[in-house]
Length: 97
Image (cartoon, rainbow, N blue to C red; front, side, top):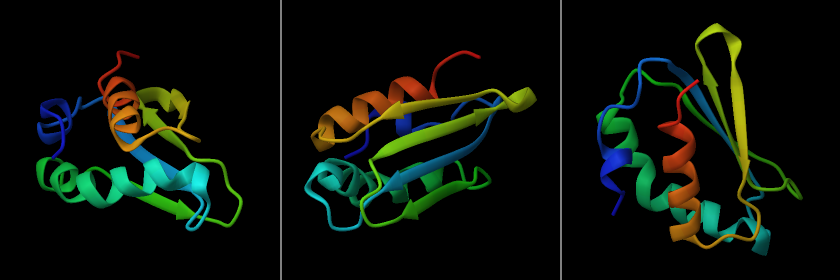
């Protein structure tokens, strides 16, 4: 189940989220599990927020958040467990610009 910070509306300054991961690699398994578990609740709470998933063989797992005025932040997720990924993503998406 998604943490409460991911199931509520995210900051208006957040304009886009991109998740990059490998569809088969072991290092991206936590990111894949996070996506399977939390994507639906994030989109239900934030239906107008673009949440893009980019899968490519060998790509390290990471998430990018684009905020107002083109400010972009990223967090590496490679090798993390699903709960660690959820914690990192929650911190990133609720961060101040």
